[in-house]
Image: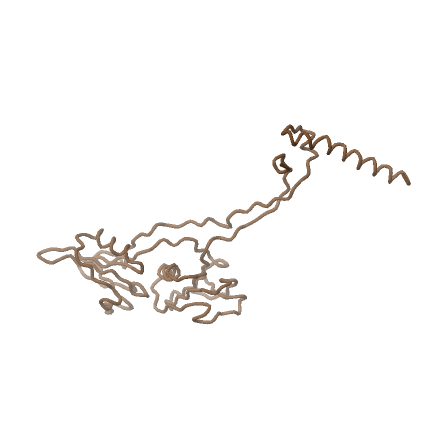
Length: 258
């Protein structure tokens, strides 16, 4: 040794190698002791959990304008919709349940209007597929108007969601209509805007303006990366939740050396 310090270091390193050589055989045989565990090399591992639960509700129907004794309408109470375009008349439905079933079988169904048959009149079932959904209702005894709320998995608030407008790479990136997002004007509700997203390939999120009834379905390749303050708007990301990962040191188990 060239000095006391060097000799001490050499002695320490030598002891460590001896302990390692006596520990490894025990590890290979699956025989570890408390002393072994106190010496074992630490490896860095990562634990990743969803940033928030995905969660979703099954498809269900909600009353539109109270539901009972209401007929479905488009933009306003006088907008009866166009047969074959905004809704499809379905014959042979003997009950409200049958009418609901026909809606669920229709990929772009937004809701239904139903009247039970009576006094020689056949039952009436309208399956609404209007892109903007059922906007309003009007009073009419014996009729029922219902919204369909389809399963909407994995929508997550972007930067809080409420009073936020969606943006691209930064808060000033409003995106390009037809490229970064698809505009669905006259959308009745946030639920209908979500439905547009679910039905759009590559949807990354939605922006909805309540008063404007404006729905943007974002399809930008890199998704909604930022938001900007905008009272009355809501911005939601769509897709699997991001992972929150944390690192920690864990003892190197015998199986890790196999």
